[in-house]
Length: 529
Image (tube, rainbow, N blue to C red; front, side):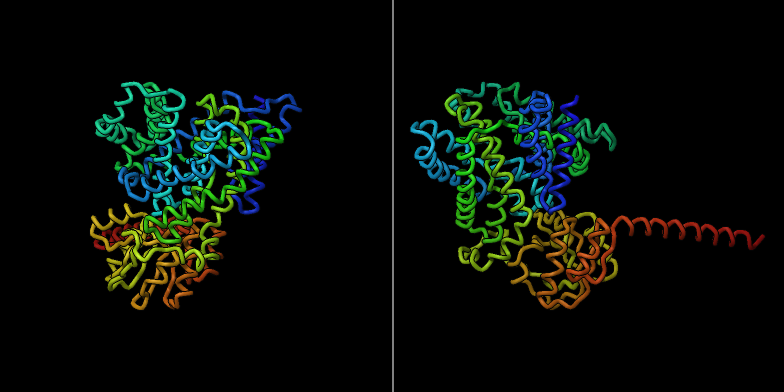
């Protein structure tokens, strides 16, 4: 118990410290893992991960992949830039990393090849965690990145089967029958209600049926958790289920990042190995950028997608651990993965600002033709823009329609846009953080803009870009926290409202109106008497 208390306290201190300088807390959790590894034995505590921490970390990964599946559509994985991008990058990465490892660290081609394969993968957990924190899982670059990661995970299974002799048995073919479970899973979710039973349903589907169930038939539990999420992604309550699992998943993932940091104390050779791989990390991102540009994605999409994939993978450690010829490199690889996390996390925090800084240079690489999802946007005869078509944005859109206006909804989630189009709303796929959108859109007919996105950075960029484009109309925004109001107003918004405060005031007004109506009615009834 003392170790758990020490680990939780250390994670809190380091997570709080890095948050004060604007870095994601996961950077602090990684640093806490290194710290525990370093000083833990001096106080009679284990310096390496034990079975309890490893188990908690595994639960966190399974639940993360399950919630990712809930927010995805199967066709995302089959898009050309996803399948082609993953395969091409994997092959080219092996061709780049393997000779370098062979020249610098080993004379054995097989060992160098296996390390090269491990380095070709990108971190599913880090990328998904960063995209989720920035609310970008549903954006075009977010779903492209997650799709590539899923294809990489499938490749990892194939690599393990070939080099470790872990070929799935005939029971693994049952994966093709999983769509038959969908009606049963939908009914199960309908019956779960909205309380703790819903939380237990999510845990059972991700950990029991997805995790343990798939391992029984010879497949990895991570794939099972993802498949369970995908099967439920079309359910109306998929978002509610994901929200119910959020806090529990976050706690378990702290164990994952601690375990990465505690993976082992390196010797000097391992440190040199990790530093060399850290120096090679930009090569990984550059390769992704080049491949995605070749698939007609624009510079901005290619850049932010590549940056989110620029970290070595925890699945690379799984591959190394499962193949005897690569196990000598397990600790050096773990250190390299940890260092890549420490580099990639803060860079991704400022991905959009970094692109804006180097936009002129990066746009030179764009092809003349563009991906269909990234064509210039036509606002038609709309007079009001509504950025972010979630619950708040949809309510604003409907209210504007009732008042006789011609609003147009903009959202970076293509599937959300398709849902609104099917419901008869005027909505288009567009990203408020995309400079190309602002360069190609005509705002002359627009009189007002409503910023209803949840992400603060997206609201700030949208407000600044509206004003930079010469827009002089009214900009109204909502805010989730009081300390965001001043930032949004300074960025160019005329009015900023605290969502929860406005909801409370609206409830009070309705209560008073109802009371007043009842009193008036009582007076009318009393008058004749």
